[in-house]
Amino acid sequence: MASNLPVVPLDEDVYWADPYPILAELRENHRTAVTPEGIKAILRWDDAEEIKKRPEFINEGLEYIEARGFKPGDPLYEWRRYSIGALNGEDHRRLRGLVNRALTPKSADKVRPVVRQHVRDLLERHADTGEFDVREHIRIVPFLSIASFLEISPAEAAEVGQKMQGGGGDAFGPNVTQEIRDRANATFAVAMEFVGQLVESRRAEPRDDLLTRLIEAEENGDRLSNEELVVLFTNIFAGAIETTSSVMTSMFLEFARHPDQLELLRSNPDGFVRGAVEEVLRFRPGFYASGNKTTKATELAGLQFEAGEAVTTIIGGPNRDPLRYEDPNRFDITRDPTMWSFTFSMGPHFCLGQALARAELQETALAIAAHTRNLELTGESKWLPRVMVNHVDRCPIRYEFVP
Image 1 (cartoon, rainbow, N blue to C red):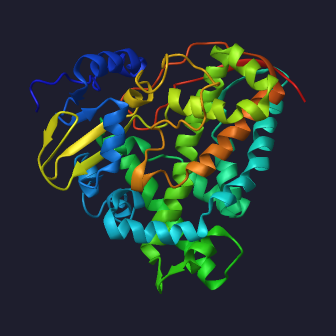
Image 2: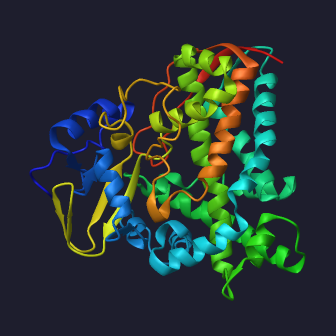
């Protein structure tokens, strides 16, 4: 451990309840820190940006989940072998190039009316009481939206969704227990088996859908392998639900806490919707951290790194760095929406699904503005500790429905 660096208290509940004052003190007084395990932690915007742009810092691969107790033969371990997030260099470029041929930014726009309708339906469904728990009920929106985007039938969507219900996000968090490992392995085992069956079905009977386009995607005579197809499709489906539902919940939460900002959005939806989404993403990122490792001995942020050493960027640090954002702890949808946060990362591993997520979140924001009045919280929300995907335990709201 770098003994002269302070520790980010990731093993303490008080940190997860509100990490930002703690991160601010560490960022301002020390620039960097270490995790309880001794991994160096980046907290400032300029350092976070540099680490994603310098070629000697690459994404962590299998060692990331090995450190969390997963081993060869475990379903999650075997899934990680082919995950685009764990690949680097030519392997990553090849896979991303093939995917980009089937997953274009323009294709994300087709989910917009689907998301808007599902959020409206959710609000109308509870209109009699005007109350429901967003955390509990919002997951159906990104689930139905990604099913529509991937062009899988309602029956197929329901089956794969049920199999993914156990979730796998916590397996990438800072405190992985045997229970979490067992649940993640069970989830990935059944999900990958089902997606494998989908791939076989599309090979036998091609459709005009994303999975068929992924099967047919080709670059310089190269195509995705069967393992790559299964992992990629599972990754797109699962990733688009868990993290997006987290940020959707945060959107309701922050609009309820900041009614003036919701009124601004209502006053000029087209003018403020991008700013509203970018501000929620900055203020409440879906993931708590982003990991890298070095390919050689190097220096960054005043720290010396050995070859192969892991380093983590605590996303809440750069996202609220006052050297990048004026008054960073203020929730303000009028900020410049082209000034992106660190939430979707940057560089070669810039989030593959960011266009889809932004489209979903923009339509959610517009639906909230159009179909609610007097939105408020009816209880306190507590942020769950020691998780990879940031979630509150609940988000109970009250509102008046506007048809």
